[in-house]
Length: 238
Ligand code: ADP
Ligand code: MG
Image (tube, rainbow, N blue to C red; front, side, top):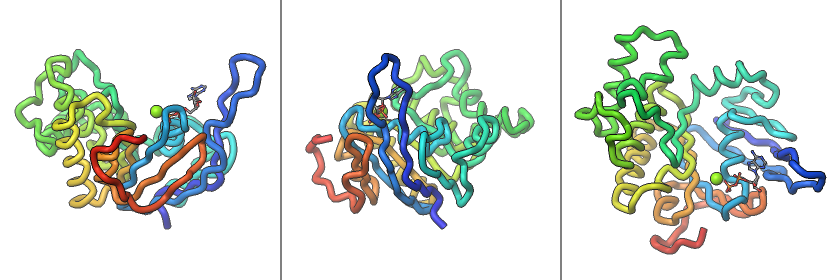
């Protein structure tokens, strides 16, 4: 059974003015198996983030069905979706989305707050995740004193702390230099190889997508390529 099964998913955002807006996603059908490492590419505005938000149960589709681990999550209420998210999915964003005034340790422990896990266990699990992402010496640092690469390592540790089966990363290296981007991608690669975590990642860069085994290209809300990641490095064609 696929971990992610999208069956003719469409998404229509409401239009602000009277004129109709095109569908952000138009009948997307695809499966992603447990343990896959998938890159999603496509021009700006093609629907990549919309797709990630739907896969991540942060939004609901206007049409079609989404089965996550065999369960139809299309019709779940917001609180049920929140539970699914918390138990199954870790998110990493381009802008890191950390709380600036609390330590790296407390940022990473945040998702555990919602699971009623005692403080001592929250701290030890958060510390272990920061060790894993190479930040064992920065447990008590504040995010705004850290480099971009370090902040993204904190965000990855936070995404991992609930032991999710699925990591969704929307342009996770978009704010990072080439060298730091590689370091971050190596963390994802290790998680994929050693822990079998399913990773779905949006990127603009061929070099980054090349870490994935499968590439999905979307244009105007529709899948135009789904196959091997067969990319020559250093050519940025979207
Ligand atoms: P990408 O991530 O590929 O750049 P998006 O998924 O963000 O693309 O956007 C796809 C389309 O949906 C775009 O036309 C965008 O303007 C529109 N869109 C995205 N989010 C919203 C929203 N919250 N409300 C209305 N339109 C949106
Ligand atoms: Mg986007």
